Amino acid sequence: MTQHYFSETPSGEYRPREIEVVLAGAPRTVTTAGGVFSPEHLDRGTAVLLRALERESGPAGEGSGPILDIGCGWGPIALSAALETPGREVWAIDVNERSRELTRENAARLGLANVLVRAPEEVPDELRFAGIRSNPPIRVGKEVLHGILRRWLPRLVDGGAAHLVVAKHLGADSLQRWIGAEFPELTVDRAARDKGFHVIRAQR
Image (cartoon, rainbow, N blue to C red):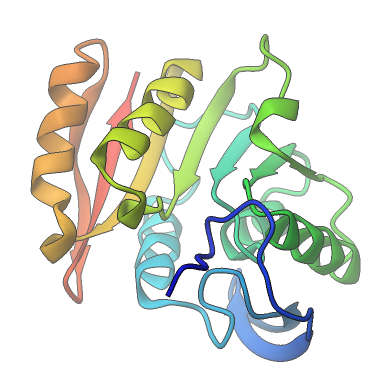
């Protein structure tokens, strides 16, 4: 298979579909399509991340500044953040233009004016984030993944926290160690472990 959800322009006809998912504690109807990550349902890793964030109630340490969702897909992480914190800007970024289109559509459908959907290069250089949340694209390979994290983790404000969900069998433990070694200014630990997934927390 040569076409991946992390391609900038997915091939294949755009065929939108509606699915029902639980976001921010309530059922929501959203639009998905092929060519994006997990179009049939809310994937298990993202569900684990959202539950961990709910348990942290905020989550603790994020403050009240903007939130960044890296690799937004059709939008579950960004939409949940915007539903839970309507007074905060939520930036949803993805290299996949179809993902961005779907996230915009879903935010509008749910009445979420605080969701700002952009390509990564469209985020202002001076913008800093109180929270970074992501189910990162592990399958792009370590070099690309590390480049993504080097780009965004330094943009946490003091007191801000990043939460990343990674499957244990795809290298959650080694990624946690790498983040701790690469960013000594961050306090790195495991915020949750559930159903074979780890939620890595990195706090400035």
